[in-house]
Image (tube, rainbow, N blue to C red; front, side):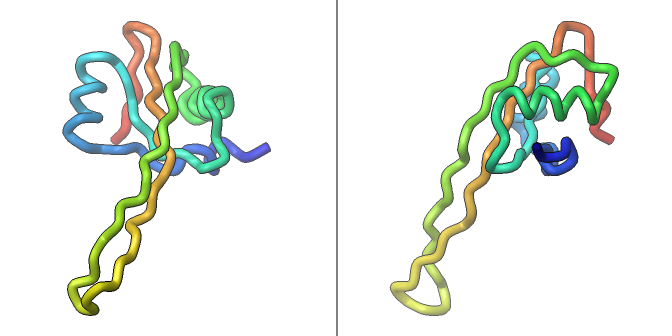
Length: 97
């Protein structure tokens, strides 16, 4: 089994993720490619022991094709990753400072 530190890579800090945090108590994390809902919930509980996880949603962010500006006709990809949306029980927060 993978450690909790290996499952949760980093929090996603974007405008959309910040709005979800403030309105729906939903936190967004970039997670390992081998993670599933159960392992993410266990990892959140280990890293942040004072919170209780209500639900976990996982989605794959697909890689985007990028065209090279230096070499014409050459395409590269900007890597994809797996993202987890973790909803906590009411009244609980995660301090991401």
